[in-house]
Length: 442
Image (cartoon, rainbow, N blue to C red; front, side, top):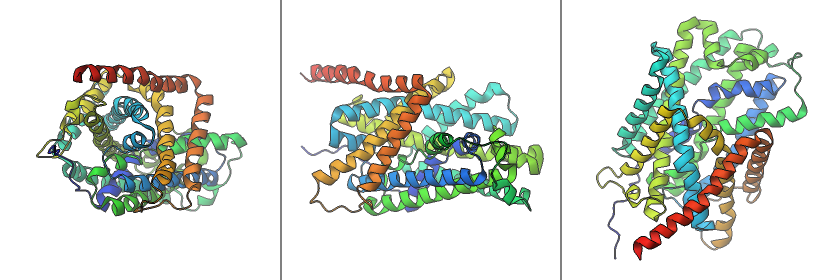
């Protein structure tokens, strides 16, 4: 029997796809995590080197995702690769951990960050933060109900605003650094980092580069995916690396290495030094735009994973439906957005994110590892794009991610243990779900 159910339409071009990469990576992290990296380094040059190394390592993963996306240009991303390479259980565990816990948790966290900065910029009291965050999620879900083009247009606007905020930061730093740039980049005699601090500083750098996988979740809606996906992933991440280097250069140039290490809000502190409270308010608007754009991508990408799980029978069938007119997974969008709003209002997302960080990076490692399976299983099949320096790049990425997981486990054994426990708890859920399905079809 022919399947006549609606499917996704390929409406995203190269710029739309690159904007998803930029918006999915650049959220709120770069406006906070630079201080943590500065605390663990001893000079501005060392700080910039770390961000360059993190960008190079992430690029290795992006090139691997480019081949995976070109081989399987379908909605669902890692879920699809794990299902084909390793079977339904690993794919379900990914969906269980990411689509049901991590994605809505990260949306709740970043939406709350958006609301914090938005309320500060317009002068609303703290009491308004949760309602504004919930309203932002509702608005994003509503726009995405009309399809990927509507969501993409909104994202493109916020990506431009995000890049404008970064350009403003860099310009402000160059004005503040007149005549003493060399001093700002020189080693800080009051802060001598230990050799292992350098490795520890790589953790927040890599976490800030996370989010590049969202485009693969939306691969089923990319035009000419075999050509567009590799190009958009490469262009998008190149833009991200450039932005991160420029932003960190701006922080060091404007605040100095010691000032950056001591700052808890370096972007706002930098703007305030030159423009006072008005500058800090403008930067708050820029950060709000950046975090809002990230939420849009996380909701759109996460909903596609949920929809693919529903269509596979790994979640409720209704969630697997695609609207015939808009070609959007409206039920999946409503489920993900509604759960994220519950997390916002309950304030329980912070610990959830801590508990899923290790699991997220573990699935990144397994996702890239499927490339070895595809290369062996389909050795005779012509590939539209092949990652260069295979198998060095995928092996390097997997090894680096496992190193990050090990370092995180040593640094935070409680959170790492809970993260792995959440993944393992998905096994009995999967078994119960499959048993319930078999009973329902008997």
